[in-house]
Image (cartoon, rainbow, N blue to C red; front, side, top):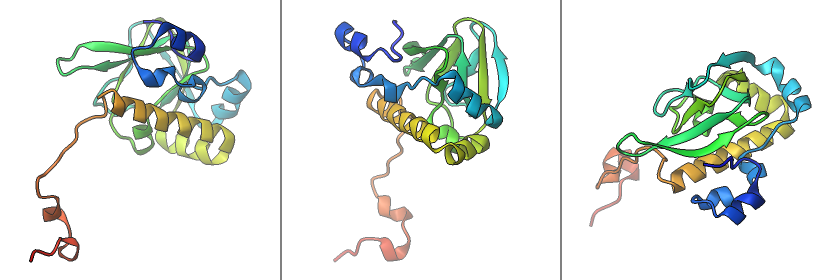
Length: 179
């Protein structure tokens, strides 16, 4: 699959299989300048990954938001465990999901295509970054929200538990009154 990051016009022309990826990808996949990455360095640490190494895996707690230097494939899995590439990401882009703010499980796999160096920002430091660097934080949060919407729309939103009698779990004062 082609690199979809920051190529909205090319993606629309090529006809992406994922409609949301055809939207302005500057918001879905922002690319940080070297100056912006330098501003974020105080919140993280450098980590290295070998080619084909998993940066994080579906269902496992993702250790950190990763701002990468290198190429990473982001993939989702179907019910049989088969991987489908969503996007390839490159230098200056970040890999994260909104679940990482609360140390929730990842909804996608991220695999190094070649050697990758990253700036890893753990959840507590990521929350600090969002507050201290408001403009960068706004771009990060916007991307996290749009990515979650994309994953839900594409069926990778995780399990949905339902019960036929939802008020059973409600406090007695909130239960519907039966006549």
